[in-house]
Image 1 (cartoon, rainbow, N blue to C red):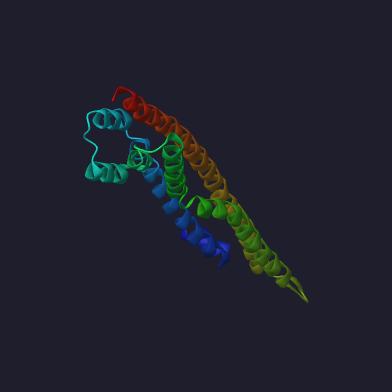
Image 2 (image 1 turned 90 degrees about the horizontal axis):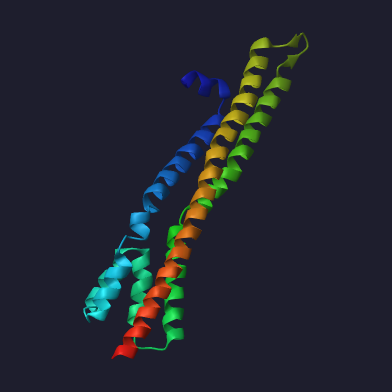
Amino acid sequence: MFHIFRSAGWPIWLLLVVSIICLALIIERFLALRRTRILPDGLLSRTIRRFKEGKMGEREVEQLSQDSPLGMVLAAGLRRADQPKEDIKESMEEAGHTAGLQMERFLTSIGTIAALAPLLGLFGTVVGMIEIFGAQNATGMNPTQLAHGISVALYNTGFGLLIAMPALACYRHFKAQTNNFLIQMETQASKLIDAILSSRHTE
């Protein structure tokens, strides 16, 4: 492996740093975007039940807001449970926007790396081509320098693509996953609003 990096020249180290950063961000997002952390099972039903039982005081609502992104949205609605439907909905939409920003954290960085890695590979290719042309002298080509230039050009191109492809796939996966979570969050928020309004009619 070290032989490959040595043959690829100094531009490969830029790609190595970028690949390490990208891998760290992808692992972090895989852990952060687990469904159990975003949309805990049974959270909505427990919240509605406790609300109808009158057990959702300020302390409980605050704990709910710290539970998960879904909890943050539900808590925003409960804080305005005594206000008109539009105000409740607006508050939950604002909380949903904040939750969406949290879920999309680092996605821009992953997308940027997916676009940047091939360019870094191309840069390494250009460096390799310069070395190839530099291998020419009055007596012809220097075989050693020519081989090194070809290695730099090919290894950097290949490594850049190797980084870009999984980075792009992960970016799109996380983006779709985030959108799916937001849709489900909106559905559950609507159910809480219905529960709040129905509780008023039964009082």
